[in-house]
Image (cartoon, rainbow over all chains, first blue to last red; front, side, top):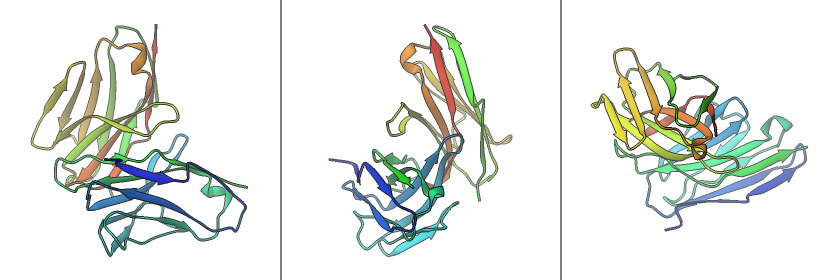
Length: 113
Length: 111
């Protein structure tokens, strides 16, 4: 199993550009989520999904869109990139069982200039 | 939503000493509390977790305690080693959904 795979690893965008961060998992996990990690702020939940066709907002959803058309994939879209979105983004999944932890991808480091 | 507070933000200990990191949570419905270790430039990885029906759990040098009444849980690392140096995050979850994280503790073990 590859686990949770994120692409790309690094990305530089100009203000106003759009892009999609890809996330795929091969563990048949129902729950998938996106976090951003900023210094001193910990991991903040952007959006999450409890199954195909179902998404919901987390703590910091503004400026981001998600969709969940399949169990495996959960892409994160930046509609119009802003410097405030410079961060490290992590995708994570879980099988939603009561005793199931999050499994993280390797992260995407995004810089918006 | 859930609010998880974590202290201290930085912690330095001598090799062989113990380290304790504390977290509090706000939502009494939270019932699953994992701890993650993140090395520089790497992804967070689970080191130990505890469910709300358990008060304490131990795995070799690492232990976690939970006080549901006080909404408080702690990570204890004994006999610290230089390879324990990393950032540690606590988290709270309601039945495996919407994991909320603390702001992290940067642990440095001094040889």
